[in-house]
Amino acid sequence: MNSQESTRAEVLNLLECAPKLDDFDLVPATSLQIRDFELETSIKLPTEIRELMDLCNGALVKPGGICSLSEMVSAYSYFPKWMGKGWLPVATDGCGDYYVLDTREIIQTSSTHPIYFVDQIDYDRGNYIVASGLWEFLRFLLEDEILSNENPIDPSTAEWDDSLKTWTNTNSKVYWPFNKNKVLEFDPDLAFYKGKVPFAWDLD
Image (cartoon, rainbow, N blue to C red; front, side):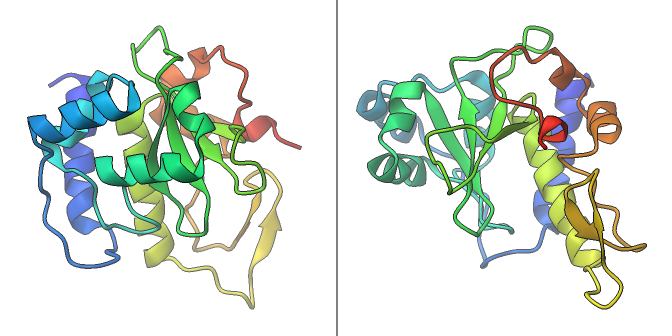
C-alpha cells in the first residue's frame, strides 16, 4: 500500500469515528451526478475528488460537513467567483467558513490540488493553505475534530498559544494547520506548494 492509499484508508476509518452532525450512510456519487456537475459548472473533477465521490457524495461529519456535489453547486450561487477560479468547496467549519480545492494549482511532487481555508471576512480570497491535497486535508480535518472532541478546551485553564493561533491547554493535542513542523511531518508535499496563498504558520 502506497502513501496515498494509506491516507485514503485512514480517512475511511476516521469517517467512521468522527463526531456526526446527523445520521448518514456513505453513499457514492453516480456517474450521472458527476457528469451533470461537470456540465453545469464546466469544471472537470480531479482524480482525488472522483476518488472521494466513489466513497461518498458528501458526509454529515463535524465540524461542518463534507460537501456533496449538489452542495458544491449550491455554494456557487452564493460565491459565483469560485467557479471562475476553478475552486471546489469541499467542506465547511460549521461557522460560515469554507475549505476549497484549487483545481488550477498542482503540487508537483504529489500531483494533487491544494486546499485553502476561506474566511467569511472575504470569500473571494484564500486565507491560507491547509493541505497539499484532498485526502491529506480530510485526514487533518477529521483527526482535528476527533481530538478536539476528546480533549475539549477548559476555559478555566486555557491559554493563548501564539504559534498555534488558538486557545489550548495541557490536554489539547490540536496542531493543524498552524504548527509547521507537525503539519509537514504528516503532509511533506505541502512544503512544495508554490502558489500565492500563504501558509497558515506565516500569518501574523
